[in-house]
Every structure is written in structure tokens, then in C-alpha cells.
Length: 305
Image (cartoon, rainbow, N blue to C red):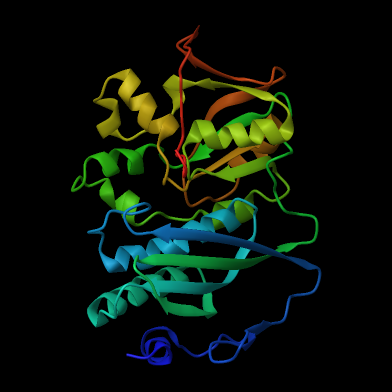
């Protein structure tokens, strides 16, 4: 089957009203809203590296979009559209039908359009998605704004996906296969959060990026980590390992002043929030459990380990 036949059959849909030119030309054309900045991110998923080889095609399609929308959410941006680069070992019509269905279900849930991309043959299944979003000029939430005294907060639960990866078939695998990008929360945090990041490589490692960019430290209270009941049945060390080192949760970790947290608490949100610690002056990350410091050696996900 030719490349363009694959695009026409599985990926071409009518363009949204705010897309001037979509799939079918050399490039897409979109008109930016006035007083908005363009926010762009890219993620690549490789079979056997970023998802188990037997993962359902529908789940792969969903996740390839969701992980990019999570990056937009971490900036406070409103998602707009995606580009898809798909490298296939062979043409499997059933796989393509399910993959495209999962991809479009995620797009539709978050109001996103597929506006272009590329399809090629490769020895290994590889999916690269570029996501585009908009944010009011100067309103993007970066990693570098954390202030001493800020609360450290996370959305939802952490450690679910890492546990599921080691226990395939467990109900928590739904969280691994179908992460929920926190787009609504990210936009609610504009003007309130001082810094933010999405948790893709593990809470400790990703929070460390905020600390480095902001030149501050942090103290995490381990008893406050929002974990599933399944993890609470494990030893403390095991539960902490999944919660702190495990990636693929795609929750938001953000810092916020106590005053702004009070403002946030009065808003209607679509996901629970947990205060798990505080930003400190010294530039290191401390772990405390029931009033005692616990020296933990924590490593997040490494692509070239």
C-alpha cells in the first residue's frame, strides 16, 4: 500500500475551522490568535523502549498524543494541533485502523487536530508527534520560577505506571497505556503556579529539573505522596521507589505560593491535588518521613543508561 493511500485511509479528516490548510499539501497553515504565543513540543515513542511490544495499537495511538499534550499542559498552554511522523515495519491494516482510532479519540477529547506529518517504512515501529498549542503572551509557566517557601504539589496519583510496567495485566496498566494529560489543570494554573513540569521520568528527577532551573532546594514529605492502595501494600522502600523513580505518570508537578494555593483551592478542578513538600533555600532535595530525614538514592528514567 502506498504512503499516500495510508494517509488518506487512516489519517485524513476534514480540517478544523481554524486550520487554513491541513493534510494534503507540503505544509500545514494555521493562523495564530492575536496576542498569543506558539508553544511547541515533540516526543518520540519507540516499540519495546517506550511501550511493551504487545501493547494494543489503540493504546499506542492514544499515548502518542497524550504525552505531547502533557508537555503543553506543563506550560499552561491550550492544545491546538499535532503533526505525526510514523515509521512502520510493514502495513498492517488492522493495526493502523486501531492506532488511528486511539490517536483520534485522544485528539477529539482535548480538541486537537491532526494537521500533517510523514509516513515511512522502517525496521522498527517508531512514532514521533509534534504538538502545537497557544498561550497568552508572557503567561507560560516554566521550570525556573520556584521561590523559597512555595508549596510543591502534584496532581492525581504517582507511581501507577511504573508499578504496572513491572506487573503487566494489573488494573493499573490502564494508567500506563492511557495517561491523561492534565490540560485543564495546566490552564487553570496560569498566573498562580511559579513553576511546573510534567512527570514523565519520575517525580524526583523531574522535580530536580525545577530545582536546578530555579536554583533552589526542596523537602519532600514521603508520607504525603499520593499513591494507589496497591502501592500502600508494599514495603515503604518499594512504594517510594515507584512513586519517586517511576516515569510515565504524566501528572503535573508544580510549585505555588501559599497565597496562590488558597486561590486555586477555590476553583473547580478536574483532578485532585496534593501538597507533598516545600521549596527551600539550600540547593538539594531532602526526603523526610514522619519528621526524620531519609537519605534515598533515587534515579529516574534514563534514555541512554
